[in-house]
Length: 133
Image (cartoon, rainbow, N blue to C red; front, side, top):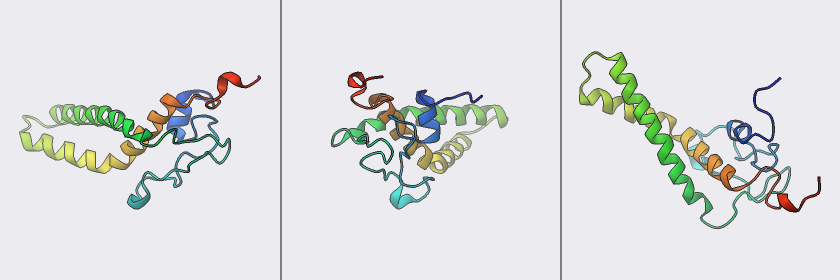
Protein backbone atom coordinates (compact mmCIF):
# COMPACT_ATOMS: atom_id res chain seq x y z
CA UNK A 1 0.00 0.00 0.00
CA UNK A 2 1.58 3.32 -1.05
CA UNK A 3 2.20 5.91 1.62
CA UNK A 4 0.95 8.80 -0.51
CA UNK A 5 -2.22 8.35 -2.53
CA UNK A 6 -3.84 10.53 -5.16
CA UNK A 7 -5.74 13.29 -3.44
CA UNK A 8 -2.88 14.02 -1.04
CA UNK A 9 -1.16 17.31 -2.02
CA UNK A 10 2.27 15.76 -1.42
CA UNK A 11 1.54 13.11 -4.05
CA UNK A 12 1.13 15.75 -6.75
CA UNK A 13 4.16 17.71 -5.58
CA UNK A 14 6.56 14.77 -5.37
CA UNK A 15 5.42 13.21 -8.64
CA UNK A 16 5.15 16.63 -10.37
CA UNK A 17 1.57 16.01 -11.48
CA UNK A 18 -1.35 18.35 -12.07
CA UNK A 19 -2.63 19.64 -8.70
CA UNK A 20 -6.26 19.13 -9.77
CA UNK A 21 -6.22 15.51 -10.97
CA UNK A 22 -2.79 14.07 -10.08
CA UNK A 23 -2.78 12.39 -13.51
CA UNK A 24 -1.43 14.87 -16.07
CA UNK A 25 2.17 16.07 -16.11
CA UNK A 26 2.76 19.53 -14.64
CA UNK A 27 5.88 20.26 -16.71
CA UNK A 28 6.47 19.59 -20.38
CA UNK A 29 9.75 17.78 -19.67
CA UNK A 30 10.51 15.17 -17.00
CA UNK A 31 13.80 16.57 -15.72
CA UNK A 32 14.73 20.14 -14.96
CA UNK A 33 18.24 20.31 -16.34
CA UNK A 34 17.11 21.49 -19.78
CA UNK A 35 17.86 25.09 -18.92
CA UNK A 36 16.12 26.67 -21.93
CA UNK A 37 12.89 24.88 -21.03
CA UNK A 38 13.26 24.60 -17.25
CA UNK A 39 9.89 26.08 -16.34
CA UNK A 40 7.85 25.22 -19.41
CA UNK A 41 4.43 23.90 -18.55
CA UNK A 42 1.30 23.45 -20.66
CA UNK A 43 -1.46 26.05 -20.36
CA UNK A 44 -3.96 23.29 -19.45
CA UNK A 45 -3.59 19.81 -17.99
CA UNK A 46 -3.71 17.18 -20.76
CA UNK A 47 -5.85 14.91 -18.57
CA UNK A 48 -8.46 17.13 -16.85
CA UNK A 49 -8.11 20.41 -18.82
CA UNK A 50 -7.49 22.40 -15.60
CA UNK A 51 -5.86 25.77 -16.29
CA UNK A 52 -2.35 25.65 -14.81
CA UNK A 53 -1.80 29.40 -14.96
CA UNK A 54 -4.72 30.98 -13.15
CA UNK A 55 -3.81 34.56 -14.10
CA UNK A 56 -0.92 36.45 -15.71
CA UNK A 57 2.03 36.61 -13.35
CA UNK A 58 0.60 33.85 -11.16
CA UNK A 59 3.97 32.14 -10.66
CA UNK A 60 5.74 35.27 -9.41
CA UNK A 61 4.50 34.19 -5.98
CA UNK A 62 6.55 31.00 -6.31
CA UNK A 63 9.59 33.17 -5.56
CA UNK A 64 8.49 33.20 -1.91
CA UNK A 65 8.42 29.40 -1.83
CA UNK A 66 11.79 29.29 -3.60
CA UNK A 67 13.21 31.67 -1.02
CA UNK A 68 12.07 29.42 1.84
CA UNK A 69 13.46 26.30 0.16
CA UNK A 70 16.81 28.02 -0.49
CA UNK A 71 17.06 29.23 3.10
CA UNK A 72 16.42 25.68 4.33
CA UNK A 73 19.08 24.37 1.93
CA UNK A 74 21.63 26.98 3.03
CA UNK A 75 21.04 26.32 6.72
CA UNK A 76 21.35 22.57 6.10
CA UNK A 77 24.65 23.10 4.24
CA UNK A 78 25.99 25.31 7.02
CA UNK A 79 25.09 22.72 9.67
CA UNK A 80 26.69 19.95 7.58
CA UNK A 81 29.91 21.95 7.20
CA UNK A 82 29.97 22.71 10.92
CA UNK A 83 29.50 19.02 11.80
CA UNK A 84 31.80 17.50 9.17
CA UNK A 85 34.76 19.90 9.14
CA UNK A 86 36.70 20.55 12.33
CA UNK A 87 37.06 24.30 12.88
CA UNK A 88 35.58 25.43 9.55
CA UNK A 89 36.45 28.80 8.08
CA UNK A 90 34.18 31.17 6.18
CA UNK A 91 35.24 29.91 2.75
CA UNK A 92 34.18 26.35 3.68
CA UNK A 93 30.64 27.59 4.28
CA UNK A 94 30.60 29.67 1.10
CA UNK A 95 31.86 26.86 -1.13
CA UNK A 96 29.35 24.37 0.25
CA UNK A 97 26.40 26.76 0.08
CA UNK A 98 27.14 28.09 -3.41
CA UNK A 99 27.87 24.69 -4.91
CA UNK A 100 24.73 23.04 -3.47
CA UNK A 101 22.55 26.00 -4.45
CA UNK A 102 23.87 25.92 -8.02
CA UNK A 103 23.55 22.14 -8.25
CA UNK A 104 19.98 22.01 -6.91
CA UNK A 105 18.67 25.18 -8.60
CA UNK A 106 16.52 23.39 -11.23
CA UNK A 107 14.86 21.17 -8.65
CA UNK A 108 14.14 24.04 -6.28
CA UNK A 109 12.78 26.14 -9.15
CA UNK A 110 10.41 23.40 -10.27
CA UNK A 111 9.32 22.38 -6.77
CA UNK A 112 8.60 26.00 -5.83
CA UNK A 113 6.31 26.35 -8.86
CA UNK A 114 4.39 23.16 -8.22
CA UNK A 115 4.07 23.91 -4.49
CA UNK A 116 2.71 27.36 -5.34
CA UNK A 117 0.20 25.90 -7.82
CA UNK A 118 -0.88 23.25 -5.31
CA UNK A 119 -1.60 25.96 -2.76
CA UNK A 120 -4.14 27.61 -5.10
CA UNK A 121 -5.50 24.84 -7.33
CA UNK A 122 -7.52 22.38 -5.22
CA UNK A 123 -7.66 18.66 -5.91
CA UNK A 124 -10.72 18.26 -8.12
CA UNK A 125 -10.25 21.54 -9.98
CA UNK A 126 -11.30 25.16 -9.69
CA UNK A 127 -15.02 24.38 -9.63
CA UNK A 128 -14.74 21.59 -7.08
CA UNK A 129 -17.58 22.92 -4.94
CA UNK A 130 -20.00 22.80 -7.92
CA UNK A 131 -19.28 19.24 -9.06
CA UNK A 132 -21.63 16.41 -8.13
CA UNK A 133 -20.12 13.37 -6.39
